Length: 127
Image (cartoon, rainbow, N blue to C red; front, side):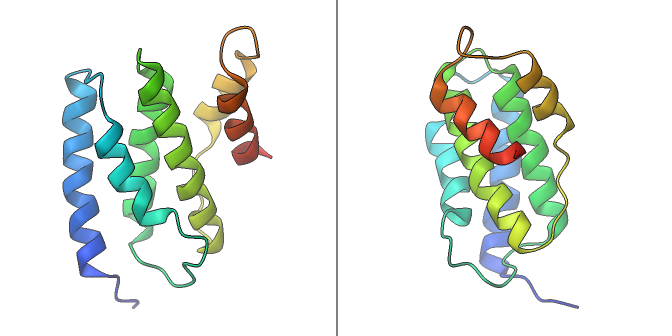
């Protein structure tokens, strides 16, 4: 069995709890929180697993909730860019993430009701 990095596992478990709280309280400023999650996955040079697949899946689900349900554009923006990094990491590690909610969101959105930046990021994940 593969031994994941304890520092990242502990760090992300803490961030998951903070993210759950932020979602529950409809926090309008998740920039630092989401950024600290994104930082873990942002390097394209990660070649070995750093956290368990279940942790990646849980983060994916929570960030998808932020992206789809947050009323704050900045939270949506930060969430989808973090999701893009997590998605790339998951592909390198052969972790299957559920894209159904993101696909449904994309069917309902275009340049008239969101930004091109967000659409491009979503399309990068879905294609």
